[in-house]
Image 1: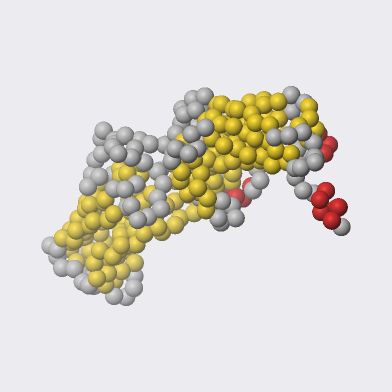
Image 2 (image 1 turned 90 degrees about the vertical axis):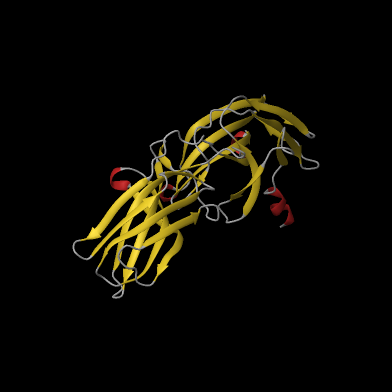
Length: 301
């Protein structure tokens, strides 16, 4: 029985290290099993380089038909699990067919890599970047090792950032005007605004402001839309009167937000909305939704 168990043990250990691994910023990433691990952070056009060490288990030799490392950018839809769509695929051959008897180390380098999209883990889709090492062994089965890393895209502040002003009402019952100071916010920003009550003939019990994320995946008949309420902020408790003005001040930094993603590789989109909800004394809900754009500001800018 012990012999059988030993037969399924890997023939070697594979270690993937980044050249600047000790100095490069590490960020948390949630794996499929729910665990959170710290992985290196990259931006597009950076060099991805390091070393791959292959260490045979004591007393074993590794016969192989070649060794390679790939840098992959992949999108996986959860309703099509296991099928990855590669939008970035680079390969470096590390070794020609032969045998490995002892620890062997291979340097690798991918220069100024185009990594156009940000890492994303959503409800129905994930976008990931990974290094994949393959020891090709033919009929005995290849040995594969993965190393995840995260890519983030940073944007400068927009040159044009108009405020949002809207009126909403129910004829002869309710007429309010709301204003948000801008339409584009960075992930650590503050939403500042005001709500004016121009006409109030229904008894309003409370008013909330919600941040909603809408994730759309697929296309046509196969479109899946998931809407999550990420934050709920009470603006008012009690009945407003005509002429009253309610201030809004909502900090974004406590919430797990991502930049807005529009039609990433024709596979998915992620949009954010401010949803104003009013509830009257008969528990009827009135709401008005407004899209905002989120972007990631370079730290220190």
